[in-house]
Image (tube, rainbow, N blue to C red; front, side, top):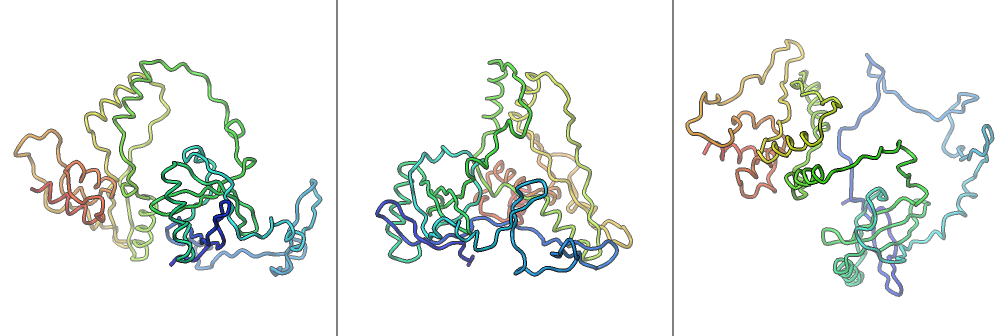
Amino acid sequence: MVSTVWRGTLSVGLLSLGVSLYSARERHGPTMHQFVRGTDHRVRYRKVDEETGKDVGSRDIVKGAKVDSDEYVILEPDDLAGLVPGKSRTMEITGFVPADSVEPVWYSNAYFLSPQDQSAAKPYRLLCAALERTGRVALATMVMRDREHLVLVGPQQGVLTANTLFWPDEIRAPSDVMPPVADAEVSERDLGLAEQLVEAMAEDWDPDQHEDVYQKRLQELIEAKSAGRKVRYAEERPAQEGTVVELTDALRKTLKERKGGRARAPEPRRSEESAGSGKAKGGTARGGAAKGSRRTKKKAEPPAADLEGMTKKELLRRAQELDVPGRSKMSREDLESAVRERISA
C-alpha cells in the first residue's frame, strides 16, 4: 500500500469528512548514479562551508533570501514557522467551477482522495455523485508541506481526485517565454483539409497503446551490458528538415496516406552481440518468410517474425485491424501470439 501523503478534513459549508491523500502518479525506470570514468568510484555531493571547505551539518544550515546583489537576509526556522497559514489540517472547498474550465498548464500534482473511515463513506459518495452529475469540480485550498495550495477536487475512475494547481503569479504568458507568432491567413480550403485530417486520425484515448520506448531501451541496454553483450538498433529514418512545402499539397498527401491505411513503421529491430566476439545472436528471422502470396490482399501482412520488433502500441493497432477479441487487456507477449495466430490462419 502506498503511504499517505496528507490526512485531514474535507469541508464544504457544514459538511465535513475525514480524508487521506495518496499520490496518483510515480515515475518508473532504473536508478542512475554518477561515477568517475574508468573507476567504480561514486560521485558524491556534500554540503560544505565555501569559506573553510568543511562539511556542514543539517542543524547548522539556515535559509537566506537575497535582497541585493551581495546582501542576504537570514531566516531562522522560527521566523518561517509563523508564516504557515494556520497549520490547518482542512481542505476547504470555496466554490465549484466547470470541469473543463481549468487549462492543463495550471495542473501541478495529482492525488487520489480517500475517506478515512466508514462514517465518511456516505458524504464522500454524495459529493462524488453530485460532481459527476453537475459536470463541475470543487475549488479548494489546503496546507501541505508548509505551503498553501490551490486544489481542484473532482470525480475520476469512481473516486475523488485532488489536483494541486499553480498560483496565478506562477503561470507564464506565452509572450514571456517565446517570440510572437506571425499572423497568417488561413483559407477555408486549407482549414477543411486540416479538419479532414484530424477526423481521419481521430481515435479514442487508450493509455495501453502508449509505451515509453526510451525507458524500455535503457533497461535493455543495462541488462545487455550486465550480461556482457552489446545492443544495437537499426538506423532510424532521420527527421525531415524544415523544408518549405505548399501547405495544401502537404495536407492532401498526408490525408491520402491516412485514408489509405498506411501503417506506421515498426520500432527498429535490435540485435544483441557478444561483447567479446561481436557476433550477432539474433540476426536470422525464425520461420522463414514465404516468397510469394497465395492470394491477393488489399494490404500485405507483415511477416510473423517482424512482430518481434513491434512495440505493444503497434501490436494493439495490428490486433484492432485483425479484430482480435480481448486485445485491450492482453500483455505484449499475448498480443504478439494472438496477432501471429490470426496472420497464420
